Length: 231
Image (cartoon, rainbow, N blue to C red; front, side, top):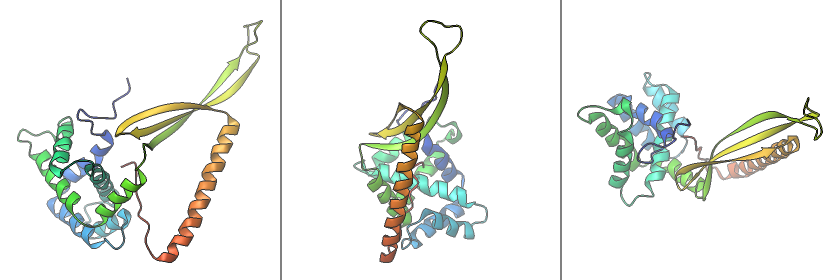
């Protein structure tokens, strides 16, 4: 049975790893993230923010910090759809009740996590800029989440005899997972070898166009905002 990608409140499970990390870090490490976030506003890059925090907090790896920051930025972008932050935090809280790692008799772990999340969402700095960039990128009806291609060999039988295949064909099933109105959906497409070549060509062409645009944009001295949509 396929595991649901959503928790009871509709909160996506992809946010849970980052939220658990945010919950488990020390108060000192959390304050380091808050401080670095406010000081790095001139260079809105989560990777550089993570490097800055890791340099002052040896107990935290860059990958852990980056996961936390990307998760908060993604949630901040989602929070913009709510009338006020308290409604958004109530939605988060309802989803976290289904996470056993955050359960405690007094509810203190979830309370502490929500307090930290609220602080970072309201703060000015890198996270705010990255969240806005996410909003710009995902301001579409459907947003790509993930993909997979399953390849099969299928026999072809003659109409007259079924004793052995008359031949075989190779087909590729392209699975696309996307978000629509915060709901994860998926559909499948059948491809052949020529379709794969066309996809490779279009992807390569898109990358060349992106490189050309970056070359022109770098002359403006305005930095690019790196966004991880998988967070």
